[in-house]
Structure formats: C-alpha cells, structure tokens
Amino acid sequence: MTVHPRAGAREWLGLTVLLLPTVLLFLAMTVLFLATPHIAADLQPSGAQLLWINDIYGFMMAGLLVAMGTVGDRIGRRKVLLFGAAAFGVASVAAAFAPGADLLIVARAVMGVGAAAVMPSTLSLISNMFRDDRQRASAIGMWAASISVGVAVGPLVGGLLLETFWWGAALLAGVPVMALVLVAAPALVPEYRAPQAGGADVLSVLLSMATLLPVVYGVKELAKSGLSVVAVGAIVAGLVLGTLFVRRQLRLEHPLLDVRLFANRTFSGALGVFLLSAIALGGVYLLFTQYLQLVAGLSPLESGLWILPAALMLVAVSTFSPALARRVRPAYVVAAGTALSVAGYVVLTQVGSVSGLPLLLTGFYILYPGIAPTMALTTNLVIASAPQEKAGAASAVNTTASDLGVSLGIALLGTIGTVVYRGAMPTGSADTLAGELALAEGLPAAQAEVVIAAARSAFTDGLNVAAGVAAVLAAVVALVAVTLLRRVPPSGTPAPSAPEREEALSAA
Figure (cartoon, rainbow, N blue to C red):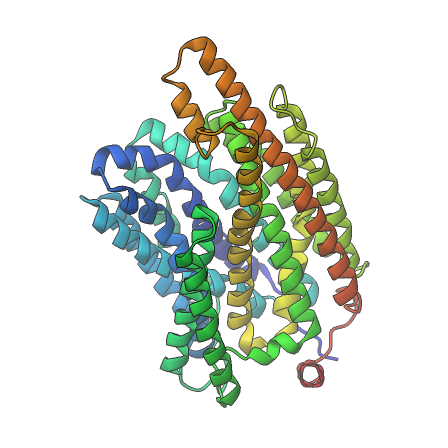
C-alpha cells in the first residue's frame, strides 16, 4: 500500500486559487442571461445573433473539454490553466467593449475556449496537489460545491452590476479573478505533466472536437427547439465521428483519451450516476427558475436570493459528504442523498399555480442539497479510479458529462413540460408561458387575468409532471449507485498502490 504525504498550507491556498475560477466560469454561464435585454437594445443583434451570444460560450466550453484536459496531461496542466485564464480574461474585456454583435459572439467563443482550458486543469491539478485520499476527497467536494455557488450567484452578481453599470460590467467581473490566477498559480500550484506522455496526436484532437461539438450542438438544439432534422443530424454525425475517434484511440500507443478507462466499473459507474443526476436536475432547475419569475412574479435578483440558501446548503453537504464517506461506503452516501432528492421532486409534483411558492421552495430546498453527495463523491471516484497521469482526461470527461447531462435534462424534461403545457392550453395560444404572458398584455384587463391564470396553471401542470419524471430518474440513480459502486470501500480504507490500480484496470 502506498502512503501519500498530506497537503500543507501551500496546497490549501493553492486550492483557493483553483476554486475561484471554477465559481467564475459557471457564473459566466448565467450572468449574461440578465444582460440580454440590455445587449439587444444597445447592439441590436438579429434573433440568431442573440441566441449565439448566449449559447456560444457553453457550446465551445463543452466541445473542447476533452481535448484541453488531455493536452494538459501532455504539456503541463498548469500551463493550460494559465493559457485558459489569460484567454478568458482578454476575451472578457473584448466582449465587454464589443461595438457590435459579431465581435461579441467571437469574444464569447474565445471565453468558452479559455473556460475549456481552465475547468479540467483545476480539477486535475487538485488530484495532483492532494495525494492523500481523505484530503483529495474533501478538496474535490469543495470544487463540486463551487460549481453550484457559481450558478447560484450568477443572477445576483448580474442583477447588482446591471442596476449600477452597463451590460459590459457583467462580463468584466471575471477579469480580476483571472488576473489573480495568473499571478498566484505559479507560486502556489505545482506543475504536473504526465511522464512519458508522448506527443499530442493532432488528428485525435480534431476527431474529439468533431465528435463533441456536433453532439453538444444537437443536444442544445433539442433543448431549445425540440426534435428537428438539424438536431438529430448533428448528434448522429457526432456519434459516427466518435466511433472513428474510439477506433483510433485503441490503435495508438499514447492515445489522446484512453477509452479503456470506461471498462473500469467504478469510473463508468460514477460517470453514469453523475450523468443521470444532471439530467434529472437540469430540466427541473429550468422549470423551477421559470416558475419563480413567470408564475410567482419575482425579479431575477429576487429569484437569485431565493436560490442562494439552497446553494449554501449544497456547499455544506458537499463539504460534509467526503467526511461521511470515510466511514460509510460512497455508494450508500450517494443513494441516501439521492433518496432525499426523490422526496424533493415528489414535493414539486404537488405545487400549484396559486400560492405555490412556499411549497416550491420547500421541495427545492430538499432536493438540491440531496444532489451534493453525487456531485462531490462521484467526481472524486472518477478522478481516483483513473491513473494519475490521466487525471486531466478523466476531469474533462467528468465535466463534459455534467454539461451534457444538464442539456439533456433541459431537452427531455423541458419537452415534457412543454407538451403538458400545450395540451392544457386552447388552440391558438402561444407555445410558451412567456409568449402567452406577452400576448395577454394587449388584452382587456379582465380577459388578460383569465388567460394568465390558465397559462400559469398549465405551466405548473408541466412542472408537476416533469418533477415526477425526475423523481423516477433519481430513484434509478440510487439503484445504479448501489449496484455499480457498492464495492468501493470507504475512503478511510487504505488505498491501493498505483500498480494495484493498473492491475485492477487491466483486469476490468
């Protein structure tokens, strides 16, 4: 058995440097939503341009994660981190002062490239800095919690900045953070480059991008516009190219992504649990935030304030989960948290369109902390089950699964909610609640009140059904966790040595 040295004060300070950009990158995915009306008034983009202004960042980030994570293993994870921080910071300034929509889209795309470089680097560097199993589990729990913080504070930061400054200020918020990373990371975060990693195979890099970009695009199109030839065609094209990518990786001596990792029961099981949890949460989270604003009538800033307590609870549970997993098998901790989420989803099935806010918040405050063990522990299992020299690739696969899971959840549960909404509304109504509310503005007050009440009731019915489906998915997550991960011992159990892990991987 290998005994690893425990991390000291320098490593924990370095962790702080790595958590700040993690919060920022997910904050950047939501902060621009509030600024969209201001951008539309100032730059007057077309409808297509406005969609790309919002979507291109997440699209580029998700599509390039695997390539960037593996390149970090090859040339140095800290080098890729610093490149990403610099690219994100410079592009943020360019976006904030963009004189037109096209330049703003390009700047947002570069921000996505920078985010794709930073995200897997932060997680894989944590695995290198914290070699002790207990400390690594705690550090990764904090990393997972920082994602939720970024998502939750995005509307708060955006709302506060937009009330005081112009829309570009929301984009400039990340510049000081990335500047701090560029200054502090070289002093506090040690470099890591996989020994005997070999050179980067350019064709593999291109194939990985050609696989993920169409798939991500197709999934996001499904979430946005429903079933279409373009969305399905993009996904099919990505899967075909993905087959070529896998075949090439199996032939290379030093593959860009070692696909044999997926034969590891713990690696693939943890990813599956994470993916299914993200699907369940992604769609319900979207409907939840729409309810706050379109049914309950809250402003984006007020909605963010109501979300914040749940995010703080998730941070607390994410920090506590690794400590509990030292004594209890991770599978059971994940299953227990997921069972809590199931209860929260069930509560959401009972929310009404009139005076339903207290019950809605109760359900969300139950289910959201319940996903914390899944986020914290499965991420650690993915990283811990991969060899150290492949942690960058494993980190990228984990983050990609999260992004795809949320997008799939929006596509699946969002579609279910829309179908229920349309079925409850009369012919000729708008396809969405937001559209129906806009139409009601031109009606006489008494008629508008009736139309709005019916639309809100139909939307709430869709939320109830989607939450029921999410509850079933969460129950499946608990079953998968207990089935596939039950053999993983508590983290307090001495860890196997690197040769033992390699032997277990080969046997799998």
